[in-house]
Image (cartoon, rainbow, N blue to C red; front, side):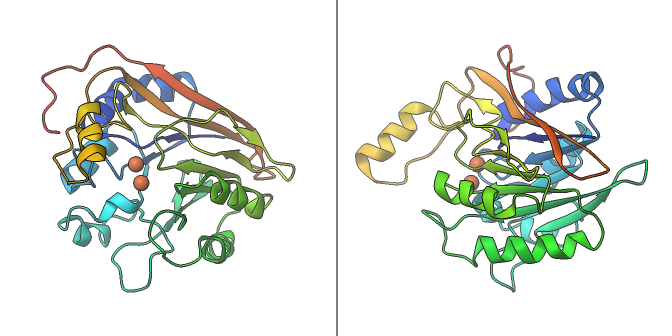
Amino acid sequence: MKVLLIADLMGRPGRWATSQVLPDLKKERQIDLVIANVENAAGGFGLTKEIATKIYSYGVNVLTSGNHIWDRKDIYDYLNKDPNLLRPANYPPGNPGKGSVVYPLKDGTKIGVLNIQGRVFIKEIECPFRVANQEAEKLKQETSIIIVDMHAEATSEKMALGWYLDGKVSAVIGTHTHVQTVDETILPRGTAYITDAGMTGAHKSVIGIIKEDAITRFLTQVPNRFRIALEDIKFCGVLIDIDPDTSKALSIERIRLDLPPINQEMEGD
Ligand SMILES: [Fe+2]
Ligand SMILES: [Fe+2]
């Protein structure tokens, strides 16, 4: 059984790359479930209902997110309405939305998807380890095939969560840094792991932002406008093959595809 996670989909180039690549890739590689991290899908900052609908239309099944999901206030209500849109499970109680879902495939197989956020160099939210463990136990009542999107800054925190959940879930996939790492592996008890799946967006940039804008902010320490970069677009993610009988990962493959320049007709940031 094959699960694709599309790495942080950054603004218009990220959406465009997904629309161009995903339909054929899904067929060619016989992918059963597609997860996309969409925390930056709307102009780099958050998500809108309209953009979520478009991303589903490209063939994505479950949307995960992270710290940027809170950037647009009008998504708060939608977080309570869309069953397949997740925000990190370990934000404190009282926030809209939820952090996990069980997605049923057409053949009846159920796949659990869990979104967790690290707290090293990000917000000091609830413990990602304890919450991931509790959520995995909850999901296991319905399925033992569980994919974790670990949205975190620190490599150490992601690696530790991978080892902590080894054998309990099918995959722990890092997101948030926008830089793909080359450490994909299957841990000893059968959990696929990568520190970061990368970014689907423009790579001639600073993590998807026009490089001059990022440099100016570092030089001035003032919140200048961040514009989405458009050059050197890549579609990034990981493809995981899972044994449906044991729920263990059989393989994990990095995806990193180059795209031609963006079609100027695509609207929005
Ligand atoms: Fe991101
Ligand atoms: Fe993030």
